[in-house]
Structure formats: C-alpha cells, structure tokens
Length: 341
Image 1: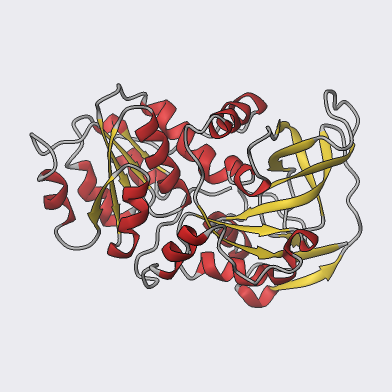
Image 2: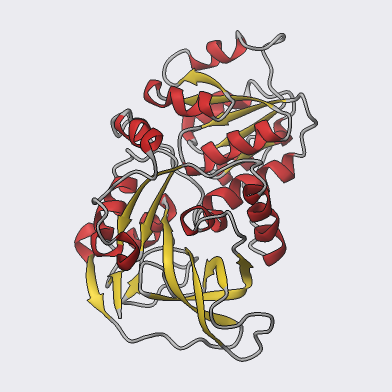
C-alpha cells in the first residue's frame, strides 16, 4: 500500500512516498481505510526526532497521528465496530496515518456522525481535542474572558470557536493576516507583536483576563502570565514546562471514545466547525507537511485519500472563504505550534 513515511529522524529529506505491507490489526486495534488525515506541528517534531524516548517510532513510519475513514477489519477483543463503519480516531502506537490503510486504537475511536465530513472529523483527535480538553480543564464561567495565544492555528482556532460557543469573551492574539479568521470565529482579534499586552489590557475593564490557552510559548507566554487573574488558569500546548513554572500547566489529553463522540456531536449540531484551510491528496502529502512546517498554515491542514482528490487541484482550500484566509497567511515569523500528538 501507499504511505508517506519517514525512514529516520531528520528533515524533509528523510521522507518519501513508499510501498509498505498492509498492516494487520492487533488486539484493541482497527484497520481503517483512510479518507482524511490531519497534519500537525507535532508530527514534524516526531519526524525531526524531538520526541525520541517519549514517542514510539517504528521505521519506516507514516507521518500523522489522526485519521477518519471506514473500518476494514478489527483485531482481537474489539467490540462494537464492523467493516464499513465510518469512524475517526488516534493512531495506534508506532504507526502513522498518511497511508492508504491505517491502524487506530479502539479506545480512541469514535463514530463519525452524519453531517460531519472526514476532513472535519480527522481534526478532532489532535488539534480540536486539545482545545476541548484545555477548555474543560479551565472550566470558565460564561462571561469570563479567555485569552488565546496563537488563535490562527489548529488548536487556537478551535479554542476560540468553542470558547465563544460556551459563552466566553475570547480575545485571540494572532498576526494581522489572520484577523478575519479570528473575527469570523466570534473572537476579538489582537494583533501579535510588540505592545500586544497593552492592546489586550485596553479591551478589559481592569487589564486582566480569566484564563489563557497558549499555543506560542516563550516570552509571549511569560508576558501573558502577567495578565491572568489566577495563574492556575494557564494551559499551554506549546510550552507545558514553562506553563507549570508560571503556575499553570500543560493540557492533559483525553483521547477517549466518549470525549471524541461529544466533540463530533457538537460539530454535527452546528455548535462550531473546525477550520480547514487546505487539503492535499496523499500523492502530494509532502506539500501538506511543508505548509505546516513552514508556519504558513491557518487552522488545520488535511491530507485526503487519492481517490477522493481525483480531479481536485493540489492544495485546494475546503471552500472559497478558506482560500481567502490561506492567501492572507503571514510569513513564517508568525508561527503557532500546537501540542504534540
């Protein structure tokens, strides 16, 4: 079968389109025909070797940690799933998802409801799920002020949209080129760069916010710590150790069927919609990875099965509005890394 994989840790040069054997699902696993797979900054970190010792890699391994598709077969001990079921979920340990057929962990698989596309569903396990978990941990009351650092990325855009849906006042910090996206999500845009904290203070009555979701890290996170009323209300997907040192924490992920189902049902009900700025066919997966690695991506980048992409232009946005957002992306200096897979 076809996979876009890496054969060693390193840069783009270690990746290639390869022919690999069809995987066999082990106990607690599902074999799924990939319809869509998300590409996230964490995938680049895994390929580059930034997660060695903490993340299981078996060469050659497909890039990607999340997928949506149809069940082909199931491994021992898996109940409740049958061939043909439309599902999405997280990849099994030591495997990736930019491939024709992928292995998903049964305890991290959920049914894809009607009205939720594969492209939307595949964003749930990593970016959208991270935002959902962070907001659940903060548990801010309606009317509270949430500050999202890096509001233009996959996690940041989801956190902004879900936060607004929960009745929060969301202030999204992102580049000028991402203003339209942030405002379309219902958040108040604050342009990143020098003086951003002053711009945030001007939007509040006392210069404070009630919670912070950080997807940037570094000095930006340090500066944000001075804005939050209670530093325990800081969650970071970019720099969890720094966040802990400041009094907050990283995001504890809940990659479970129950959580993924709740998120999918919210999307199906129209509560919010994941931002997908562009899709590439599997045959051109390297372009999707490059878009994420170069820091130009807005929202989520998705790779779709070659048969689904037949006749579609490479890198075509999911809709006209997404095309406009992608064209407005800022240079790589405005990067918004998300949490790892």
